[in-house]
Image (cartoon, rainbow over the protein chains, first blue to last red):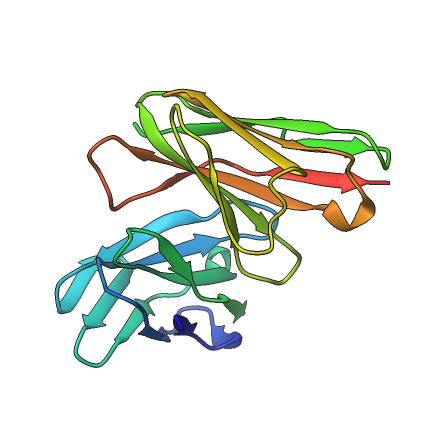
Amino acid sequence: GQNIDQPTEMTATEGAIVQINCTYQTSGFNGLFWYQQHAGEAPTFLSYNVLDGLEEKGRFSSFLSRSKGYSYLLLKELQMKDSASYLCAVLDSNYQLIWGAGTKLIIKP
Amino acid sequence: GAVVSQHPSRVICKSGTSVKIECRSLDFQATTMFWYRQFPKQSLMLMATSNEGSKATYEQGVEKDKFLINHASLTLSTLTVTSAHPEDSSFYICSARAAGDYNEQFFGPGTRLTVL
């Protein structure tokens, strides 16, 4: 079966750095997405990785290792508004998104 | 660009009634639209995939006669929850994929359905 694992919840301090990990086992791979979702709102796109390596975009970076079935989202200089759920999703061989359960990130002052 | 709208954003209805949710791609043509459901503190669950001009493909466990999907044009898909019951109360989100782009999906803002 297809499976995506990410931690259920993480806590970090304002101004610090946090890394959210995601491991996946899917039928085929056409890229991995990270989305941010605030409570009661739809997901918003953060990043897309299809090749191995690190993609940096401002305070957020995303890393992918296809051989290990592993990705992480790195958030730097955390702000209170970064408190949200972060969803890892893999595009499988049928170009269908397979979703992780999401990681709830709590930022403390 | 790539904006997707949903209407209504919130709806409250009585048990046994039907509710229609619209999903529109505002500035691009969406050959494929996806309908998701999300219960509190859970991740998105794909309900069905609809391609313009053809019947929707439903995920296992989703009743096609209860959740009617119509994708009649390249910019509009509708989801009708028929004979809604309290257990259908959820956050319904649509997303759209542009023609020729198999990667990114653009999400609508979601519709909060509460069935009394």
